[in-house]
Image (cartoon, rainbow, N blue to C red; front, top):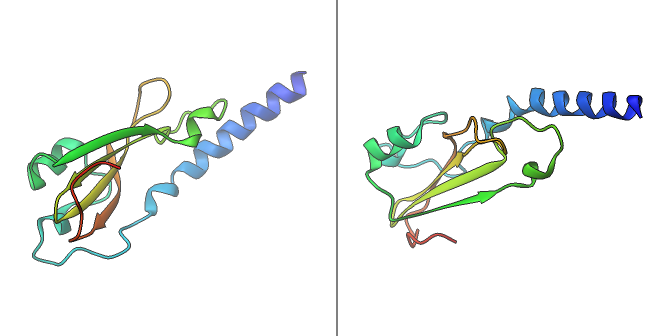
Length: 119
């Protein structure tokens, strides 16, 4: 039983160590240089994004599969998305299961056909 507990603790540490490289996902299609969306950078907070783009047309928040990983202390157990009609989406890591961390941009998606409604 002690061995199982030690392995679970090590697996949690490995998951947390790999978390540092996960937010490197960038936008599939970059926003045009003159667009306000092009000013949004990975790692920005929700407030910084709202200061640039204004309030979102719609937003949502949801749990990721990482919320079910025992001993997961990374900041990506929840995600939030801001939807901007005719501009695109901004996705945030929204914290861990214990209410800490998060609130940073992990993906910017330029989409001029964005409906502006959460899906």
